[in-house]
Amino acid sequence: MTITRRTLALVALVVIALAALVPTVNSYVAQRQQLSELQAQVNTQETDVETLREQVARWEDPAYVSARARERLLFAMPGETQYRLTDTSGQDVPLTEAERAAEHAKEGEWYSTLWKSVEGASRLTPEDIPDETGSTDEDVPDEAPADEAPADDTDDQDPPQ
Image (cartoon, rainbow, N blue to C red):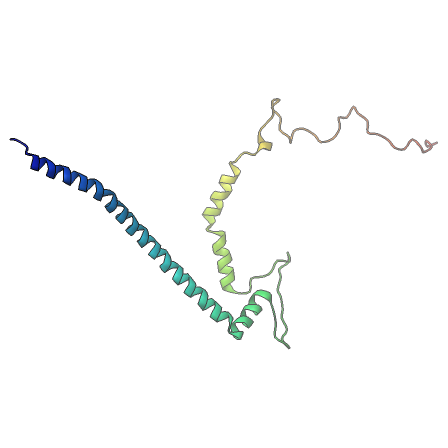
């Protein structure tokens, strides 16, 4: 089987065409992917803008502003009397059952609290590690040794007789 010049020229032309076409197709695919990502980002930002516009529209309503001021800032209308409940520690008492439920949910389940306690108890702190002599900071007294007498500032006074 002999390869003619015409076949060789045709193969060379196909190779050159592929060499020129592959990077172009690759950049086309990459740009299409980037375009679809940007379109998805634009869609999410448009929904965010719509949500923010709804919030602005709510804040333009005087009844909504009044309700939020009463809730957040504890404002009262003229002639109203407000009472603020606190427990014995001075902390605010939750006003509603929903707030109590939210506070309880924030604490977590009893077993997760127990596990956090076990993990915390198992961690060493630098104060827990003994020094070279084998004693910890808790073993060393903070006071001066007993053989050293404390300084006495009563030298000016007369001794008792």
